[in-house]
Amino acid sequence: MYNRVVAAEESARRSPESLTEEQAERMLASMNEVIRAGEEMRGLRAEMIKVFVRFGWTQDRIARLTEMSQPAVSKQVAKYRQEDDAPPPLDLALDQHDIPWLEGRLWGLAEEIVETTGGVARCAGYVHAIARGKKRFTPQNVDALRRLVEEDLRTAGLPGGHRDAYDRISRGLDVPVRAAPTTAPASVRRALACQIQRDHLRHAP
Image (cartoon, rainbow, N blue to C red; front, side, top):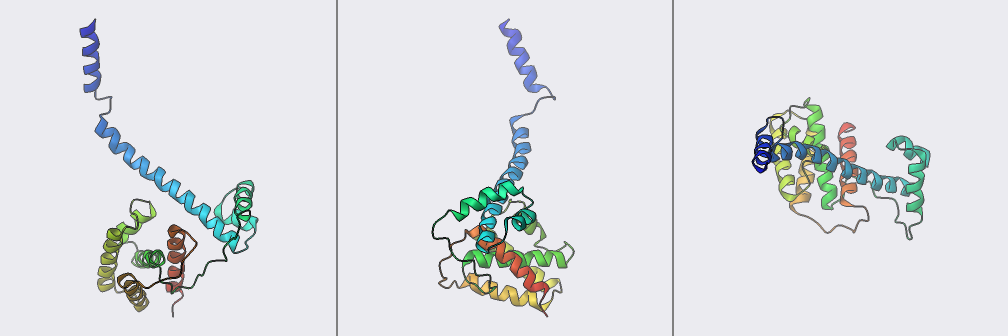
């Protein structure tokens, strides 16, 4: 009886219908990345709702933009409005010097390069990885993205405004200046700077 059980277990381990631990690990790794990215995006959306509340936007407007239900938005808005000493609305000027803001500007510049080149830019893979949560804004990843952006600026025939923006961002990252304290999380600062940089490039003369 014992021998039959052992033989059955060994057969199950060898059976092509079963997964090895390595196969399961590879399969779940991609799933976990998607789940992790989803959780991070939900957290970022919650922080952005807080920003919208500070701008005085209505719940209807926030619900429409976030594609959330009215009750879900109302719950979050009520929570934020109960917080004491709510900070003033964020400064959305492009020329700010804290590192998350500069990283967000770099991200936005890279996204514009990818769109302008029809997705064939050298930095495209990195931009997609950031969007999917596979790449985080570590110093090493930021340096790698900068190198790719520099290559695109040398070879892709991009508008001069892209080079000007990169030069300003690069100087800020290379020689950080003392920036005023900010109340928003780094992820929010990056997301805002990314969008503002893209809008600035799109409307540049």
